[in-house]
Image: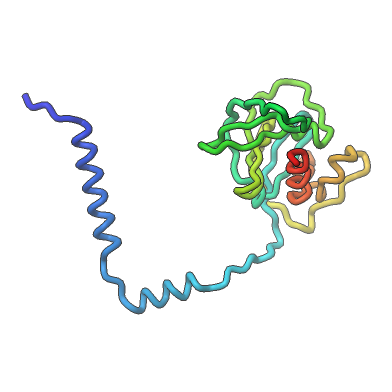
Length: 196
């Protein structure tokens, strides 16, 4: 009977993969392919304004909120939130580890005067902001992504709380419900403001 070491097998598979990758990267490239790739990489990137907006829909308490998909980086299973000593910002819940990154976690219900009564059934983190200003926002539920024609966004009524109204671009329809579409720039400034 011959015994083999599993780590030797794994190393052999890794070196075979590495060899195949090296061979692929070192293959000769024609000048036409190189010119075409250079042209594509060198093109100026321009953002195209679309007639539609992609929105991530999530719920905090009874309030459905919409996050612009360019602002909402990802949805993540909730992790432990650790308190930050000597920080008094009421909306700062603490810091959380999300995919190996330590980011501040915010109580959005505090900032937007939302009521959160019951414990969430399907809690998630909505991670928002650019890479140097990321925040984890605990939400009670994530509905998913929807595409909304910009022309269909309606002005929020005056019955919306003052804080939520100030940070809302408008309302988007989700069938029989409406979601408050949050203003990404204002929301990020509001989140960061408590840390200064």
